[in-house]
Length: 247
Ligand code: ATP
Image (cartoon, rainbow, N blue to C red; front, side):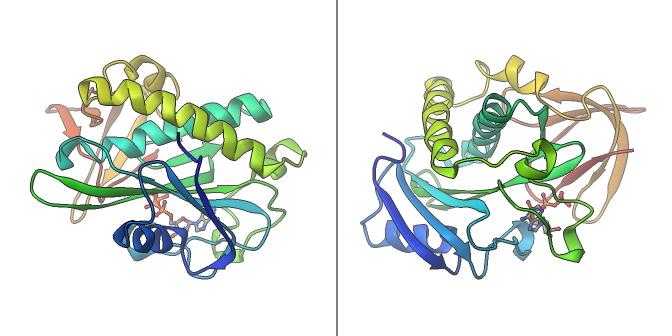
């Protein structure tokens, strides 16, 4: 059961780092959850930092040991986004959307970020750590991110019990995860995912490592790739070091 075993400490450098340590030591098995009140060195993608002040958000990492190919592990980020987005909608009534591949946004601002990390061999996964950061009762943000970040409190003017949200995420994540592992793809989740995808049928710019291009976002396919209609035809974008924004 996801989140049945929990490691909690008031303060950690990063819940992903702590979860990886516990997995390496053989302490954290499939479904093990690590959570803190505060991260002193919370992580985003590409070595960026994730603001994680004390007591205002959910900073947690789930350890999984999926029996799937390492090539399919990046889809776990999308599976997680689906679960978190659904819980936010159900618990707050807010119209949140998934910003492919790893964020949840409300009114165009980021309320949640997901960071998936993996230890694997060519064809075998030792473990996956899925980090989930949600701004829940946050009242204000550091200036650098104040225009791009928001919280459930800021958007709905209500405060939320974080343990309830965590419980619900574990429940839905386990449900969606089972659907995903049946075929090791997103075929059973595709319709729901694309309904929750921000910028669908809209013009986007896709920023890859060196290059960028524009097109119309058409949704994801069952491998979790984003399909973008360009003048030259449909391009499939793999999640990884990319960012997509509306224009
Ligand atoms: P982009 O949103 O540009 O595509 P990304 O999805 O790669 O970036 P992440 O790695 O998910 O970004 O998150 C790191 C970035 O998120 C930081 O560089 C910062 O701009 C922003 N950020 C940091 N802390 C928070 C927070 N608590 N809430 C919302 N945004 C944050």
